[in-house]
Image 1 (cartoon, rainbow, N blue to C red):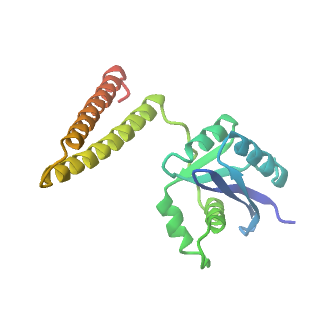
Image 2: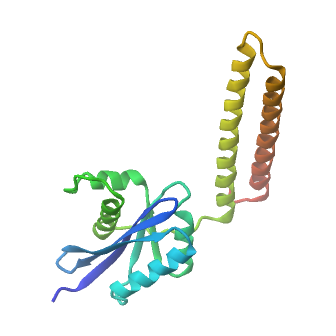
Image 3: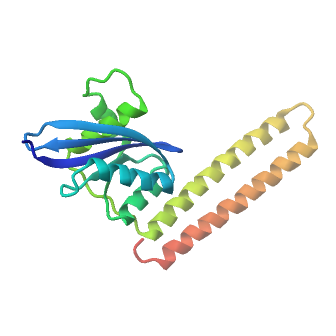
Length: 205
C-alpha cells in the first residue's frame, strides 16, 4: 500500500474567494489531486477551509498550504494559517505561471490554477513563510499609500493642465484642482515624514 509522504493545499486567492485544491504525494513519487472547493476570503471561510482539509487528509503527515503573492489579498489568510500553527508558503506568481505551462492543461480557470499550485507544492521544496517584522510591514503600507497618492496627484495635474489649456478655462474647476493638488502634496509630505520617523526610530532598517 502506498504511503503518503506529502500533502499540499494549493490556494488560488482572489479578493473575495479562495479556490482550493488538495493533493497528496506518495512514496513512489506519484501524485494525486484529492478534491477542490471554494471558500470565502474572510475569517469564516478560513475556518471552514481548515475543517475541510482536516477531514480529507492524514493528520500524521501534516499539510502545507501554498498560495501566490497576490497584492494584499493573500495576507489575511497567510496570517490566519500561521497563527493556527499551519505550514504556510508563498511563491511569486511567475513561478506558478511558468510551471503551469509545463502541464497538459488547455484552459486556465481558478480551479486549474489551484490544482497547478497544489502540484507545484507537491513537487518542489518550499520555503516556510513567516510574518515580516511589524516595522517592515508598516513601511510597505506607507510606501504603497504614497504611491497611490502620487498617482492621484498626477491625474489631478493632468486635469489641471488640460483645463488651463482650454480657450476659456473654468475658474472654479481650476481652483478645485489646485486645492486637490495642494492636499495631495500635503498628504505625501505627511507619509514621507512618517516613513522617515520609522527609519530613525528603528535600528533594524
